[in-house]
Image (tube, rainbow, N blue to C red):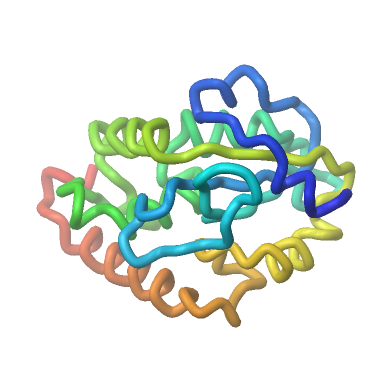
Length: 184
C-alpha cells in the first residue's frame, strides 16, 4: 500500500455511506482548516483539507472488520461508545457545541447529541481510504508518516498529543459528574 492512497480522493460523509468498500484497509478523516479550534493537521495535496485521524479496519488476522463496517457502522452511524474518533471529536467540541454527556464505563453523548455530532461530521468532514489485507502491519508507520493530530495510539510524539489527551480527560471527568438524568 502506498501512503499516497490515503492522500487520494476524498469523499463527503453522505457519499461515503455507499462508496466505502467491505474490505480491510486504512481510512483517513479530513476537515476544512479551522473546523476544530486549535487543531491543525497536514494539508491534503489537493483541495482545502487537513488530516485529522487515521484508522484501520481489521486490527488482527481474526478480525472481521471492513472499511465499510468501521467507517459507516462505527464512525458515521455509531456512537461515542463505538468509535474512538467520535469520542475524540466529542471531547474537543462538547463545550463549544453545548452537548450533554453521560457516563457508563466511558463518556458518551446523550442520544440527541450523538445525532448532532453526526450532523457536525457530515458538515465538516470527508474521508479517504486504501484497501490493505493486513492493515495492522502498517498502521503505526502510516500514523508516524502522516502525523494525524487526533490519533493517540502510536502518536505520542505529535505536538497536539497532550492537548487531545487533556480534552479527553476533561470530558471523561465532566461526564462522570453529569446530572443524574443524563447518566442513562
